[in-house]
Length: 129
Image (cartoon, rainbow, N blue to C red):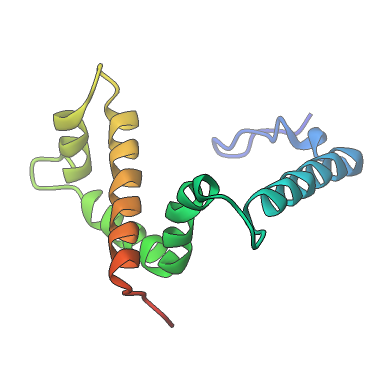
């Protein structure tokens, strides 16, 4: 068993990543992507499917904005204030539903970025490199 080095825990799950396990994960992922491709990316899909994938198209078209914007926003919100608390923690405590501050904050952030991407997609505005 590996020794602990300066507070670092040994890799308990390392033995799981064998070649057969990695192949099972890869084949499952490939099958899931194939099913999603056949269900969504066909030329003749119904209105229901088109409406269901519209938010994904909006996120895909503004993926750079969502990715870098969320990281920039979280770096600002996680800086400690003079009081020792972070704005992210204060917002999470203020919007907590059922005592689940972290879960509520995470859902709110995902909803914010999805709505922003949807709004920009509707307006035809895209961040491009």
